[in-house]
Image 1 (cartoon, rainbow over the protein chains, first blue to last red):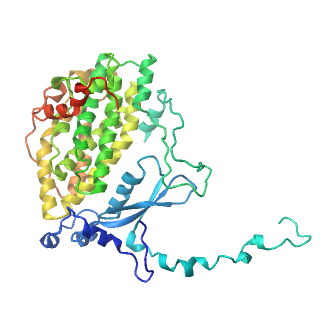
Image 2: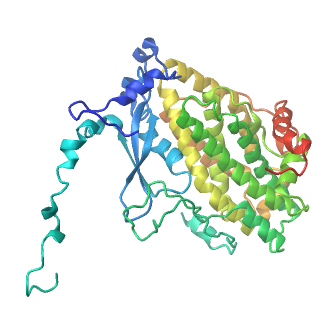
Image 3: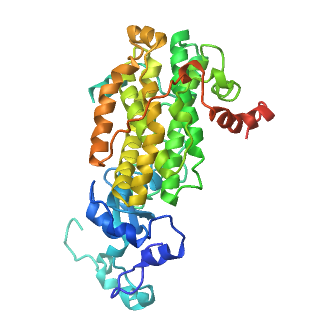
Length: 142
Length: 309
């Protein structure tokens, strides 16, 4: 579910997925021009009215001291609602103490097709590990 | 916050929680780097089962008045949960589907606790009260049984409900009845989120398109007539207020008006100038919608009494 693809072109899976599914969100061009500017995020909301909800990636910290770990993704109209949807979708069973949401399109990811050149190079390079080296005589505390 | 701390001081025991963690593979709280983001734990909170256990042990038993009061707020939650449950698989977005489902389940949880407690006065279980009472025996206010309408109507109804319930449960945390206080202390955190959820949507619907704004305006017009009933005092609340079990519903009105007013002003919405209904839900007089809700809710239990699944 995580975005992937060419690092040159950040994943824009959000809009692709959204277009395929029927949505209730207003797509009427008229309504955009008469959008009211009130309440929080009025400007960003206005800009998003024509497009369906965008995709967000959710990171959940399960307890204090741990890192945030990718839990999944969701659709939301803006960051504030993304956080709330994340709370509703991914922490229903007491999974988290903290949530991050990140617009999926803000994530650049490595290309699965270049796994060889990206990740196989370090294989066999034992000398990059401390265990490769023998302990020198007389050195204590190693 | 001070009231919340007071509630913790109640001696209501929360027990009976074994370790029912599921799907945990050595990812303890020790800071295991491989701990899953979706690690689930039951957590510790007051459950209806805990209350049933206390009742069974003879540790708690509500007076007739307290039971009648618990029945009122329990029925509010029960009927609303039934209404909100109808949204499952029908909400505008999958995310909202789950959000409304969560709120429904929260309400059902409160209802189970309050009805379990109320039932102790009459030797009845939560199921006896939910499934085997007739319409005139339900004590919920009319707002809770109002039809879902479109999404905006549901949000308008939820907005009023959650701000009302937040004020009520906040006060009930200081109740002289330890069980009422304990249930409310658990409920108030959940209701606080319901406030946020509905307020966010009121702002967005009001500030969205002409269509969404027209719908939320219409939604408020439809549900606002049922506001006054929530804040009506009667003989029962007067007696219980004197005993310190609850406060007079009318005393919650000022804060409700102030807080909802702030959101309405931010959304540039007006409080609808609509006449108020007569109410009567607290006395078992319900609107025409109630019978259909009960029919749907009770049919299975009545067709197959004692069935479990």
